[in-house]
Length: 337
Image (cartoon, rainbow, N blue to C red; front, side):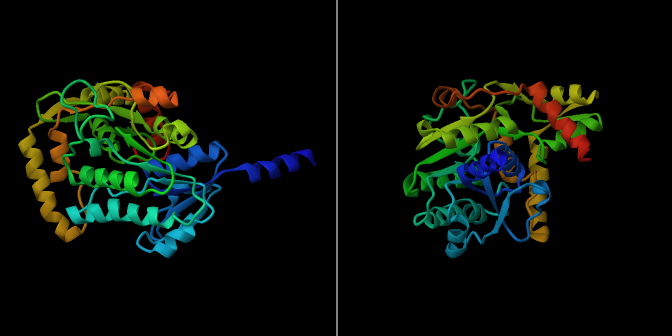
């Protein structure tokens, strides 16, 4: 009887939260972390979404139309926290980036005005801030200089959140994220498996990284902390890496040798230009496209996490070696490699 009462009270105490883009890479990892932290999770997904990443999880699904205010209002009803993770990283033109990343955010913010929502957590990106000027990591106070349509659309979405959100908000800007369910860094694992390690250009490229479990823990910490209200945070593990460092970690995790090949940037442009032509037939944007090459050319994708350390007491729990090893084991277990 005591156990039944305890479970009943626990259910009553659970915070109700909504995650947009819940079936994606970061979204599905966030959902799992929220469940571990005793949240009552609703996943907002499209009816055509692949839900394999959420299979057998004790969550509620809402099939909302992001362009329908009534649909969004119904999905947000009775929720206390909105985690807006849904975004388009690759689109076929600038307008579609802004439609997906800005207009959808506006609609979501409008839908919560008459709801019980207490906080809005927006997952942005380091691309919204743009690269650092040099080896010193960029801080949240630095001027933003996005170089791609994706980065520009997310920066505009940030402005919309700051100016139009009717409840306390938090903006998280992750650096490059890797981990289970990620398909972008998976390509490096596949290439190393074939004993190849391509590097774009001949200049050293420095960047920040964050393992997805560290990222989702920071997101939850920001959602739970009043000190995070109306603040912007970069998310990373606090280290400065070369792409070679990541590749070396992959080689060690896989116990493989791989030849490093420097690919001239002009060849990346040729491939990107070919893919830009191809998208009009496939109606999909390739991973290597002109916008991506613009980002790849920059040498200092570095961000500071000192603000998150100070206000949230955030600390990364995973070293690069540990994160890459965990990712590799997951890829193997799920037969992605």
